[in-house]
Image (cartoon, rainbow, N blue to C red; front, top):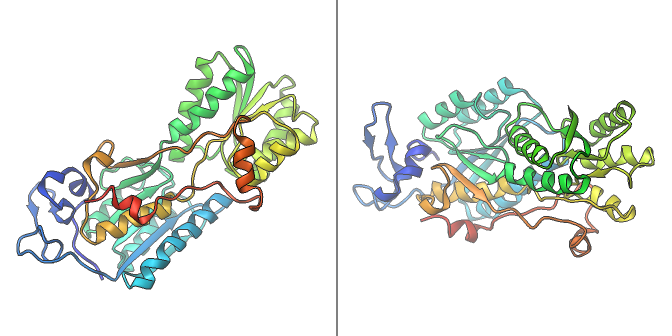
Length: 364
């Protein structure tokens, strides 16, 4: 069942007009009110009750993070399906480039979805297809990585703050003049760029020498291979700054070289890395990047599909729902955190999902 919506920009910026998510703003700036969307609309009709269809576009499946992200979305969707509010969850889930993800979104549009949740491969290259969705009154939520299009609601943590936290810690550990190498994710991806820009600034502010940067593809095996090469190329490495999805591989390379206690590595809040952290008595840091942002976005989507809007004070810059970071993990609180998660598999990513009720407090 498709219900009429306006652009997400109208939904987010016209809060003072009531349930503005039900308005359609045309290219000429003229606003029209569709029927049957809200008791606040002309005619006093009730919001649409569903059942709705939500699509998911994921253009990168090469990490445990993305696998857990999809599982979280499916688990969050199940109660809505049982209630009869959600008819179907349509997954476009495959490794692809930007053009392939554009096709994913078009497939979802053509299948008649009411909302789309996307982990985007680009911050700007998908703008045109986002507008296609908005023109058909489909809500779009970008998770994990923010996009610039104001027709999209970004739901996720502040990736720059996430990266800055571990980079500042590493800079302090290696000290001014320390030599650091960097194993990044995938160049060009929004999260990678936001993270590295912030991390680079923090490392440089700490007087650290950045010897080189390489891409590890958010993949443990690639991260290990890259670190092995870096060790043979740069004999004097004091520290490694890396992102989630690669720290365990980086650490494995250091262990094999017998340098795990000589080179300081920024870690990741994942079972495998934390297990090695404990086994080798490391001094490290991990900041939680929750795969559950997709499930949180699903709760927002279901609320808005039923006629609610996001409260003005829950938004940043008109279209961003910025989720609070979980407490940073260091040696000071490691034992407590690890005791809670040590029985999880090595692939498990420490997670955080806002419940339906918690999201409901951000809606009106």
